[in-house]
Image 1 (cartoon, rainbow, N blue to C red):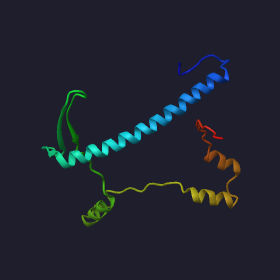
Image 2: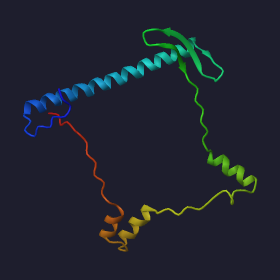
Image 3: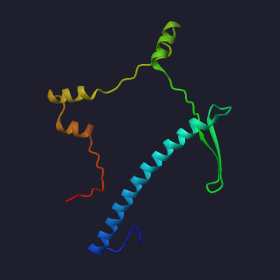
Image 4: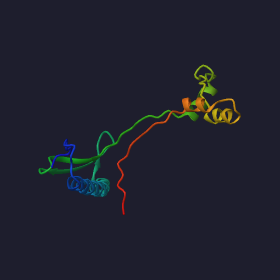
Length: 144
């Protein structure tokens, strides 16, 4: 069955069949996602119980599965650095570098903009210009 039917004169039976297929596939996709999540949690538990750490800090469980081509399942250690602003503020202040390592950013205050509008300082047109509508579309199935 084609995903897109270019014929402008589609009949209702065709639309209903595609609707039914859509609903079935969405349900299956949701069930698959839940199943993958469950299995991933169990595999992670197996790795934690039976695996051994490697030189990078990951935990490795050898499985040698020819069917999937998998040698091992790994709970891979991933490290990222995040900027800690509170710690940085304290450190820079203690070293006298705070003023040279900071900048002032002017930001619009939407609450103040709306207050100016309610005070009559801005018009409806001004507000419409500053807050343009954004239209999005969603496919929704209305149920009985």
